[in-house]
Image (cartoon, rainbow, N blue to C red):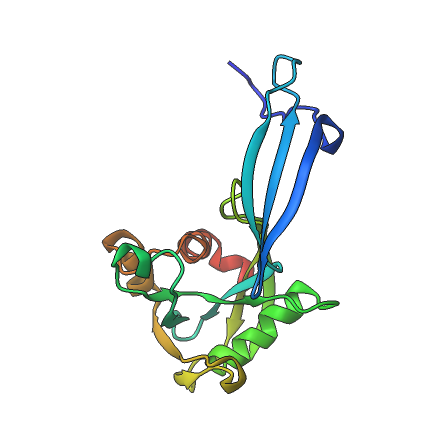
Length: 205
């Protein structure tokens, strides 16, 4: 049994890229990679072929109002992943958006909060940065929790230039947290932030 979680010492130099080709480019881009890599026993793998959807990195934020003990979530149409499975493609999730070039992730979180819900963020706390699906999706997500006065937040928002149609939902924290277990919230980053907030409200006070 390993008593300490220690990553393997491999790095980019232990991967040999045999082919890299962008086969599609629009909102994001799809890149085909053929490569081989060092195996855990020190030998080299055979040739592996994978495609990756590459997009800009993102920032997500869950604003919490301590006075109301409520959070603001969003609901909007998300075609990728749900519509193709004949599932309801309107998703309830935390505020999220792509990081503009030269923009700090925290700045993105504040900007997106105003654009998507009208909320002005107070204290902003980094929760983690990481990948949602590193085998196929190139996006790195920066997750934040924040305080905000949500007493006047709600309604419909989004940029007309991007055809956004976003509903802002201010709900009690306990209701939002219960929605993770009963299936109303299926978005993993939102579930992670709600679980973090359940254990760390004191860090925002």
